[in-house]
Amino acid sequence: MARVFLRAGNPRWWLDYTDAAGKRHRVQTDSTSKRKAEDLLAEVRGGKQRQKLGLEALPTSKVKTLGDAWLLWLECWCPEASKAIEQRRYNANVKDSWIADANLAELSGETLDRWFGQRAKVQSPSTVNGHRRIIRCIINRLVAKRLFRGVNAVKETKPLDEPEFAYQLVSEAEFNRIAPHLPADWRPICQIAFVTGLRRG
Image (spheres, rainbow, N blue to C red):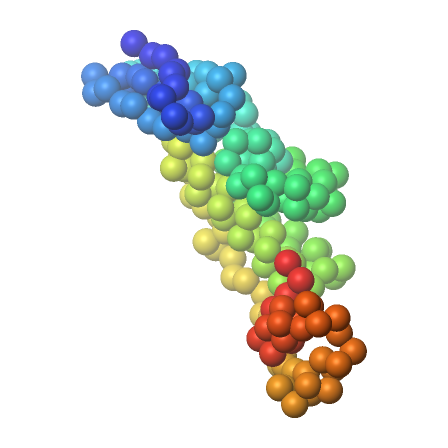
């Protein structure tokens, strides 16, 4: 028995299947698309068949490369609030890079460090460390979803050292000199922003 279904009041699809040992599972996916849920179920059923045959589960056809894994993560698991930013990250740094074709099952810390080093020549350490965090998250999600049984190669790497910045806030006396030049209804929110160092976002 294997099916996908929805529960009342929940937009996320669920998987309902029995594993190779005969145990029934009901698992909520992160997808609101029935088609994506059915794809995940097909991957689960493929793994079940391999288990019955006593074979080692291999990465599915969808996640043969790091690029495949990145796209699957963007499509199914990336938080909606971050999706636009992360899509730009993928397009600008991964899509046309050799790292996108790296075989996920053969990915090593050495390979990742080589790519991180290349990115560090044109990007800040914090940006490169952001790439590292996303790759770690992607592989961890694949492992959690049983779509990949390999080792997370990011564990074999270390983040780049990031310079520490000293932030100088506006003092109350300094704000009082600025305040007369601000519209009256903007002064309270400006004061909060200036003296606490709030960012625009």
